[in-house]
Image 1 (tube, rainbow, N blue to C red):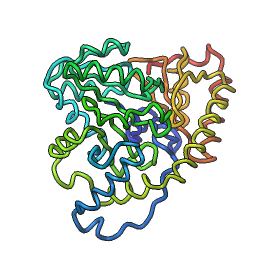
Image 2: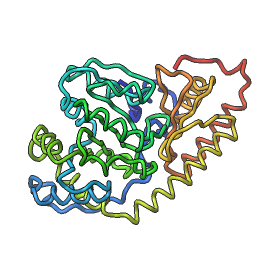
Image 3: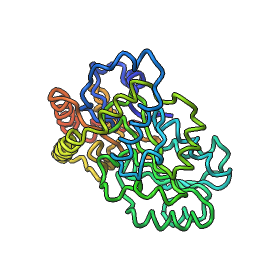
Length: 341
């Protein structure tokens, strides 16, 4: 399954493209949290329980959960998907779609019958309901009020609501459900690597009531999170000054990207400040035209008119993107052959 971010796949699709590639196919912050020297013990010893507890305390504060007891730390949220889905006995799983495809796959792995639905109301009768908020890839936001109402209805009938807030670090924080997990019947997922630009660290969190968080930890087992991930998580999640400054920077760069696309009649119709969502009939042609120039966007086999574009990382990448868009736009329709995505 293609999730973007693979230079090997980019080389296979565009073998004659100039390198280095400008990889805009992910929603990962191109301006990562500053690297620092780790203590040697982070690499030479198993993580201490006390240090992991500090990580959970810092994460609870950053995400506005009640406390460390509401936090399960994991080596990335991806590994949590089937574990969380298994909290509900095999039954009817419904995913608010279109969205990140791994939720449906994870639910099937643990025995659920999965249906992708288009409205929030359609989730009410599910045993397991999944909402990605902000949504990937279009940035749709579901208000916390509506999600709380859904959670209440599901909790009354023993269902489980999973809210994937992988991009909530750059979303409207008032709509986060992290502060409500104490009520039960709900798991909120938070990604570390996307906003902090450290995807290779492999760190993520499930936020839930204490009994559920403990159950998840037991399934992951001891030392699930590496020593380096613990140290980077503690430092970055506690650095509120960096976070606020970065949110401002990303907002400015997302606006700059919108302006650049608009200049060449590429319509941005949604997204977050980490990625922009494009939808128009020329999407396939644009994907291939930019790819041949070594600039890789995220395309979708089931939505040929849609693209997602992350932020360029440097002045050089911005210049390459602008030049490639200008060349693409200058081509007349009869010269620009539509190619399959």
